[in-house]
Image 1 (cartoon, helix red, strand yellow):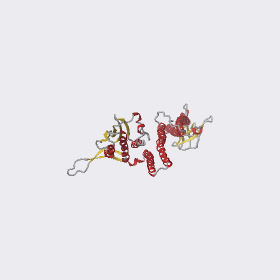
Image 2 (tube, helix red, strand yellow):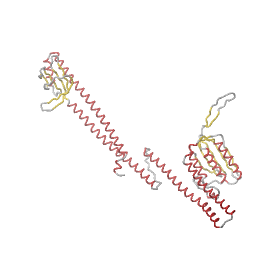
Image 3 (cartoon, helix red, strand yellow):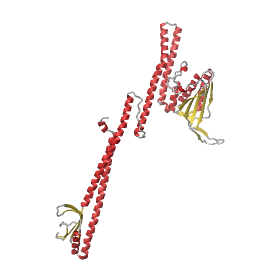
Image 4 (cartoon, helix red, strand yellow):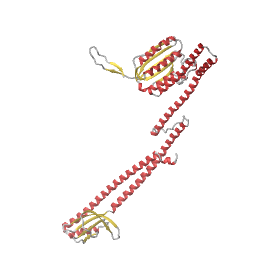
Length: 470
């Protein structure tokens, strides 16, 4: 990633936003502290002014103007005095104090004062008139107030600077970690685009947002890799399984053309060619059906399906087929149970399993269809007493176009169990194979709908509730 790209990223933009928020907060707090401290100190100065003014006024009331002058002189002569005093007559002549004469003015206000050295001070004071018209002004230097305000501003300046520095440092560090994770995601995605489907995004185990995003992308890549491998396998299997019937079809047609066959021979050749074409079309039709099921377009047709009635219908449908093969088709369906499913797909799934058992179990075999409820789930098992299949082949028989070696010469295209797996996956059913000793047991576990007892209007002779499946 280039330096410009590193500067233009969400992490630094978020850091800038945090810096702005922290700086604004610090400025707001500083302004509040500045205002509160200023008001508090002005109130304190006002208390000092009021006390000194009350002392002068009290002296005037007790012994007259001379006592007021004496009180002002005593206040002015106090060591380390910070107060500023002025007592002047009606003609504007100063009688006592350390301030020059000024135009009389009532109330609280600020005036400029200069000391003998020329230093300028701002004095906050209050002016008033004694009963004989003498003007009295008592004030305090605001140097301490100004110094406190300057210290507050300086402190908050340092605070804002430290806040910005810390926020910027934290933002850079966070952004660096964020960019490393984003770079890892980008590298992995580009590797997959380049054809390395085994690449995955490394996880930190923090369970943060980026970790959750990485896990979701890894799951998506796993699914893509599975689909690509499935497509590759299907393409290979189609080429392998259809090459023989297509070659046979071509040879028959070329033989018929080359030998100038008679009409009956041509008719027989055409009949066989049509059967070969039907077999090839059946393969493609089954593949398209599996793809349609895996796309999830049938989810909208889900409804409540009575499992026992469905299995009874399948048993009735395949009973003559089993008799023709000198086999027994038995059922043990237990009580009523309902599931949420697509009835047509469910019928095809169980029909494929029963047909598969009849086809491969052999003559004299016993095939059982069992259904029971265990807790919240319904269990359906198709069990046969045939030769079964090796445990090492359990995970392969659900692949498209996969056939056991001993089944290569029997009718079929290796898509029956693949269709079963697609239907089960669409319904979120669990399918497992096990040894029936002898034979094969296919178990399908599916969530069952809970039965709900619905009360009915009771009339004469009616006293029982009606049970309905939810």
